[in-house]
Amino acid sequence: MSRYRGPRLRVVRRLGDLPGLTRKSARKAYPPGQHGQARKKKSEYCIRLEEKQKLRYNYGVTERQLLRYVKKARRAGGSTGQVILQQLEMRLDNTCFRLGMGPTIPAARQVVNHGHITVNGRVVSIPSYQCRAGDVIGVRGRDASKKLVEGNLEFPGLANVPAHLEFDKGKMEAKVTGVIEREWIALNINELLVVEYYSRQA
Image: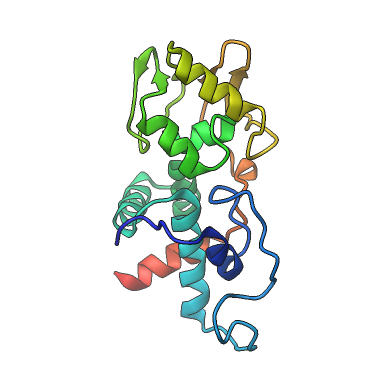
């Protein structure tokens, strides 16, 4: 299944607040569609599926990519759910979003795709690049790149920069000091249900 490019508020109404997908908030509190206002009890499968979909839509990954992250997290040991979240948060596009270089994750992905971002002095245009401790993320030396990122930094998507990133706004340069802690993850999600969803699919 390819990346979602449809109406974002429709997804927010169905799944709840997704800070990485859009900055807008839905005017209607109930899910979209003809039966959106009907009260119906959700099955356990439906609840687990919705938690998985939150990850997919918020971070803008395909089903295949998410499955790859799940398999990698299982091999890593420790809390599988937390490792999945950390892998998604440490992607370059999400890291740029958390620094305020893009108002949303799709916008930050475009900034990366168009070659405006450098990692350790080299241009990296792969949004799924996994940032590691010691990486220095900067803006390319071109005027167009600086102007674009400066404009985005005036209105960041999330107010606070996580503790694992040291950001110098003047230089427009950030250093990754470690892996993100669970309490800094802005998405309201129960990652254990995501792990359950995939364990039942296997």
